[in-house]
Length: 352
Length: 165
Image (cartoon, each protein chain N blue to C red):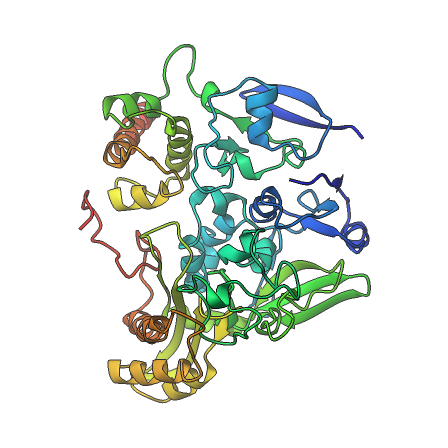
């Protein structure tokens, strides 16, 4: 790890000023950036520690029915907040399917959104990588790319955004509140992350010094609470990033889909909203043939970026299964294996 | 430039001078305070060997800067036995053979203690396994670890029932 200056501001305004300097980075819990710094992937000259800033660790129910989640709320605290999990069950399920209990206890809401890709070539400083060293090329494009993107990629970068949390958030129209030198602004989460195009080093719409201070879910996001799931296929049963994941949230009235939300994870460099799939679902009876049609529409633009054509069919099946699970209704209790397609019967000691 | 961090470690409050902000909580414990029960496995937040409780929550001490945790309450494996008597989770790990080489064991035990405090897994082995998935065991003692957590859960349930009675 390279050496750095450490500063601990006491107000958001001070933090923004300190982080606007070239080479500065924010430190929240550090579960991602410290890992990257140990590997010399990130080499900030200054760390601006925001963990002691007051007022950013609250989950607030808003008078309009929405909820505002402070950027420093820990992933575990949000997922285990009974009121939040009841109203936004797919978000809670996504959070509990990610990382480990230790990491969820530390990792923050803002940090989750800003986490960097897990592409092995990004982590390997001996490899070329346009994200880490702009203009050097993409080692993954001709390398090991089984897990890489099938949507929105470019030849300059084919990796994915690793967040689970962001997938249901994008489905539910989450808004990101940002504080910068020019004051407060907000942007839909769906527009927050940038696709690689020819500048994969620019990962989000954040300007230097800008800081995520909160994420909001609108009141409408709670209308899906009865039929909302997150489904995540990974290489291991637990403690692994998604190969492909999907959030599905429905409003079902008199046996007909009144409103639908679908988003995918592990398929692109941003959480991927599938609006065409949503349109197909609305007004129809929720059944397997409909789910399959919606899933086909969700992946209509998909193309392999390497040895990953299998992910296209896998993603279709994950979307269809997520819709089937959502239609069956949100479970009363969080499943023992959140978001797992292999959820075993509770009470059995051995696997299988 | 000098820094310092004030931490309560196993009930003792100390202010520790740091000549460099790069020191992780794990390195502080092991290299500066001689609390070597907390193990350094991967040092990248993947194995769980370095698990300690910070303000009552289990975290990976390798991915936390000591300076940033200023003011926190830290519990390590050295602080869980009371007056020479093992913690019920420690007793359960021995009784259930929840270890082989023992390297991951302090992290497993700290994680299990936190898991029981969280109270979300109950007596469901599937929930216990899921909740312990952040602690790897290269010897593969998982069956014994799961049984130990369940046994400790029972022992603590019985103890709390006794307290209530």
